[in-house]
Length: 200
Image (cartoon, rainbow, N blue to C red; front, side):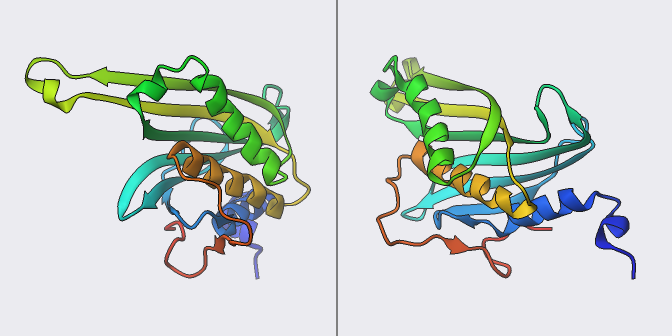
């Protein structure tokens, strides 16, 4: 019987890495779904969305993209690259705080550290957008959003090592959405079966 990598036409290390992301233990508030992956950035890629739900409402959203170039990429300093996007509404006054961008970036760094997810070559941006209503839209008042875009090269010995990065990503989404860290002793749930698992 042919190996799965031969059947799929994809390197086995990429297949293992994708499996690790799909099976990673995420925050229970994050619901994932597989997305069409970008095709021109790297020879192999995988993408999934993550929506943060609380109180029956969606309060944040994001996505995680895995890129793989078996030949390596000098800018990545490796053969894999993770790219993330996270966005949520924030208090309009909070959006005016000059240190918010720095704090937003620290949320990513702290999440990776807390999950033991090693990496090199981080890069990204933090953007705040504040909207004021005028005239017929004055009643809408003020609104603001925080958006974090980042990429980094994960360091891992096997595909399973990527699970820590996915877990950190889910923590970032929840932090951006304003949720507190999980209480000590509360376990995240592995995504098994149909529910909570990206669609194939």
